[in-house]
Length: 209
Image 1 (cartoon, one colour):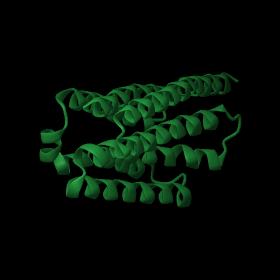
Image 2 (image 1 turned 60 degrees about the vertical axis):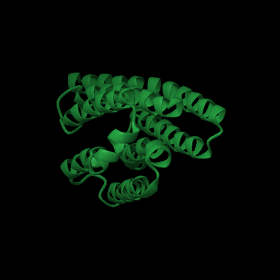
Image 3 (image 1 turned 180 degrees about the horizontal axis):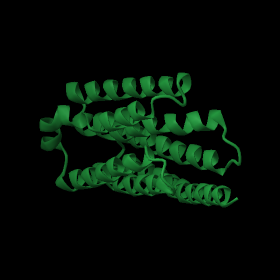
């Protein structure tokens, strides 16, 4: 009985943390589109729209998955797949606006290609190889290093600060994502929420740059 109560308490915490994320992500999407529209830049509008949509999708998928009383394989797959989409989506405003050219399109293609691989793995192997899944999350998040020189030349130092801070929160959270300790997944959710907020500010600086 206690273990069941503990599990229910943890799932409630997981649900609440990312339900908050739904509201914040919808507000972020609206604000970014409005700000980008003022610039009348089609690439900016496209980039922030893709980013915002993947952000909303992640929190919706996670909240619905943790809000169900029984484990739902489809929602669990969507929950895991949405992480790949968000990683690629977060890069998109940078690749479509600041980098562009060869580096920008190369990163764009590689990231969305890896996201497709990750999603396929989530569908075909939903409960297998969690360590490899975490490794792919981390690898995608660090792909920016292959374009480090052009990134440093084009991205403002404030943007880099928010990107690094968010990346550290996500990376630290992955440790808890792979753990089976009590409330470890809730800590992961809080790390994701913090990382999302940091990366929102990073994207916002791009719109203002």
